Length: 305
Image (cartoon, rainbow, N blue to C red; front, side, top):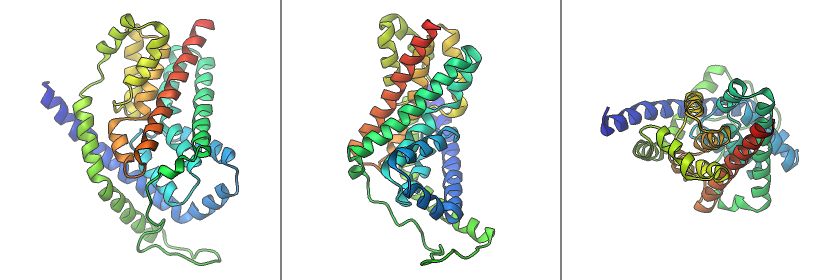
């Protein structure tokens, strides 16, 4: 398959997949916000930043979203006026606490290393969310529209009236379509950029780095190399197994896949709707920092245990 065919296949396959996934996630968030949104906001509003970040990291750990599909969730959280550190923690935790990497560690390494990965990724997600909140990074958020769109029922005081599921689903579908339509230009540019950069994950080129870069520095390099690539959750396990079978260490492999799953050019373009450039840079720093630390910890553990 030539380069143009590869790029065209990527645009059709990943573009449709991301559009459908984006709509479904936005639909689920809109539906949930109608029934649980206010109660959830009240509960999180009464917690400390640290506890809220822990809860957000827990939610992120059990949601197998790719970097792009976290964007509609994040948009919903920001429109609900949840604290910035809580929202940012979820954005980091959902792709970084990666189920694919966890499965590979359980299969190829040990349950101890898998547990170490979970603890490290969880702690880093919470730490970055809390730290950036304390540093006042919320000032780099773009203004968000009101939490409720036209057609929603808003009640001043007292319990909300019971609304039929069909009516709530119709409103959620309209909200999801509006979200997808407003994000479509960013999504299209992101997929096109991903097709140009991506094509396929250059496994042989990554393996050549092993001979050219010192072992400890290879983890940092692999974390940086992973930034532009789009790797969906379904791709993590086969890519990881291929890299390991060809001799790449567990640390560099984890650093690359955590970084590639945690951010990508399509996701960064989508995030421009929500973040100003300084916050976008901090997002990349958080992902690369998390991937590097996770890679170093796993590499050290593999040599020590």
